[in-house]
Length: 144
Image 1 (cartoon, helix red, strand yellow):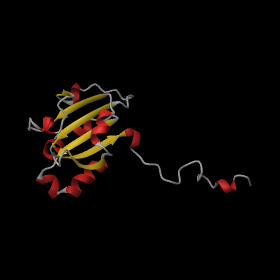
Image 2 (image 1 turned 30 degrees about the vertical axis):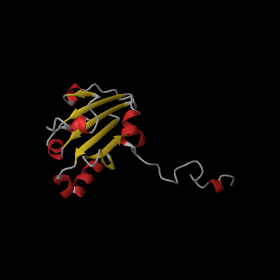
Image 3 (image 1 turned 90 degrees about the vertical axis):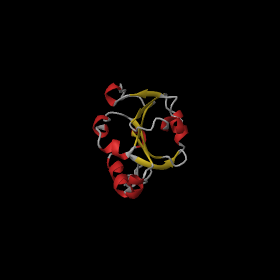
Image 4 (image 1 turned 90 degrees about the horizontal axis):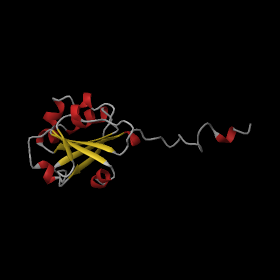
């Protein structure tokens, strides 16, 4: 997935920065998007597929915060997790945590500065190959 293309495909992008590094947004090119202070001030539009909330965080800020409880009802969320030693040393643990919340992993991006996880309701669940109109319910038996 081309992360920058995905972000540009959304019509309403907002950024919530939870890290103390003031230059991180400019380093990864997100300073041009509207910034919000908290999820409490974020106006949700649960019917819009064009909205995207980008949360830039380190693991410490994310785990100790209320983010996972407050982002219910959002269709598209991108987590950009700073690529620090805590993530590198406990990759499996944190990957499983994000997978449990429905996020898909898209690798590192922005010159290996962040790890990218995306929750997009439109592709939340992949359909298995057998679940289609050609293979469903033994079509060869339909005429009997």
